[in-house]
Image 1: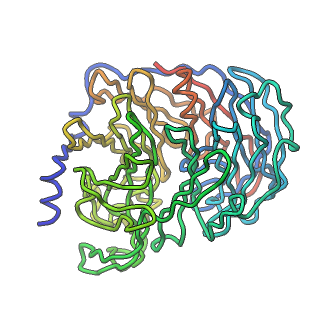
Image 2: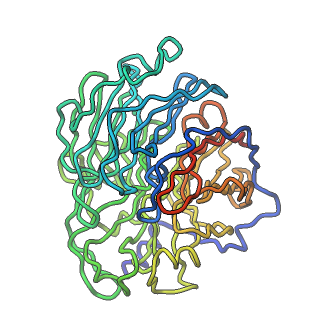
Image 3: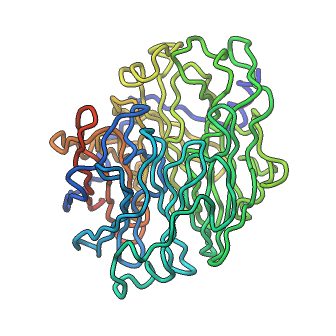
Length: 466
């Protein structure tokens, strides 16, 4: 009964793959250049991914004031930050005084820029541990041509945000508000029992805003088993038109008993909330308050769900989100549809064999549309989504394959527009959203496949969109 009510409220339209393919092809891409950052970057496979390229990094590569910045771990485990003058300048590297502490692909490097003081911020090497944090001198990224690039431009490695203690965290992600303040999103606690929190930097001081999601509450799986703890996994945290902050997500339950088989994932449902006051107050799709940061956090609830899905389909967490020029949120999810199995038993293998990608977006009336992308990812990992200036959408799938659909077709003419096996891409990739917005060029950060722990090249490919 609850599931039927959710479908009625959200007016979710599921379109078949055959109906989703229009006669005209989606917009294309043109490879402009492919440059090497490091011929021997750190390589080990953990949780089916690489520490230098997990698509939930925000951001692993970004652009500001005509320069592009990225970061990775070298073969000897050093954290490196690099920059280049766009469009095709040579990469300049600075080795930070930190080495990766553990072979865990969660322990990525995330970059952020605070426009008010022109600093580059680096958060890295965390998975339920205290952060390793570094920030550059003021003005380094706002006047890059006047500053030589070197390690001396960066401050010491800290275990706090300039004294603001975060405790054990995971998934640090930077986002800039419309007022040009820098925010940091992160999870405290652990998988299946954690909360999302926010901190904010005003150009001088970091301040914790507090928790905005709850780990508590009861949720009962389709087999009748109840779970009392969970965490909210974000598909994204994105500011859009009018300064609205969008967050699509899935929940992961702490009690694996909700599954039909222990080889699955306890992720379930796609939820959505938004904030019009920079992450202080969160509202559900229909506008009612769902929770407040530092007060009454957002908890598990059926009225937050915009796409119902049980826990037995290998639904991926932290996939992708983007906002189009009208301010409409879009999210990309992937899972094993019920037509293949109703019980995923080996989530990695089953997702590779049967997994499908779905595009969801919110209409002006507030309902959500869902369509299956008729091009199989053939992978366990995640897909990234970006829009060009004409609101055409591009999905950058694992292994560097690019699929597109046009705004003119209402995102129905899905077409595989780039697939080059010779690039030898391993798994997930990262993309530079800021360069797409300013130049219409998509930069894709990827690492090449290797074996065991043999280092491999890490590279950046640039594409002209449309």
